[in-house]
Image (spheres, rainbow, N blue to C red):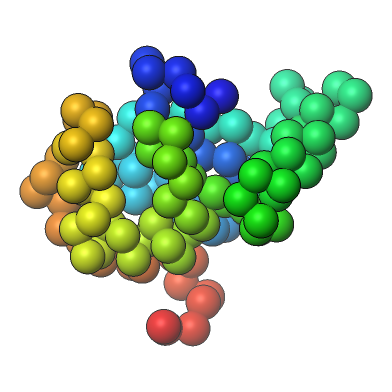
Length: 121
């Protein structure tokens, strides 16, 4: 899942998760194509495949939370780490270094994609 060169940006997500929705919205506005692994989707329910992937992911990165984002096989982090990296420019640098297309003119604060019910950071 992490080594497919045709889908170098991977989002491990839950369909119902508002933080996952926020990352998806930011990726859409920034023109970042990605592969979503929705661990709670019907496609991953058989034989607890989604749960097994989540356990393997936790073992790999040591973090239990979702979403988790990878670029070209490298772990970026969850929503907060991804938003921080986008805002400080390091996410765009990583995309460019891996020849992953994106809209460099999208400069909106990544945290603005979070649900409005959240308290400001």
